[in-house]
Image (cartoon, rainbow, N blue to C red):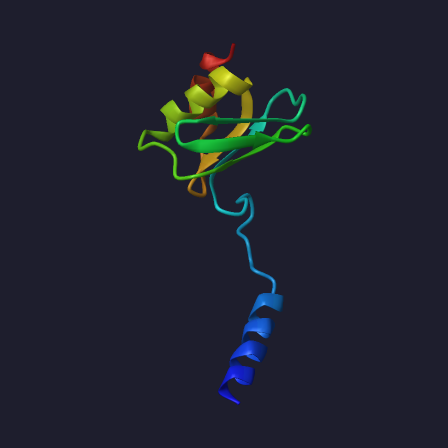
Length: 106
């Protein structure tokens, strides 16, 4: 009887939708929107797997290196191109920080 109760409870829990904060991918600690979207691509660097869709929305999965968000953004921009938005741990960079970050664009 206890086993049946556990199984039915597990089924109910797994059927419930899991809320995700706006702008956060599943397990993502960082995200970006490219200023000039292009082809879909994926690359691993600085301890994260970055995946960018053709619409320019990029999501990072993985813990990442311990570094300031501005430096992380510049390193991202050097590989993927200028960004219109960059956020890490739910906090977006300001317009001034984005301008500084985009100086690393190729």
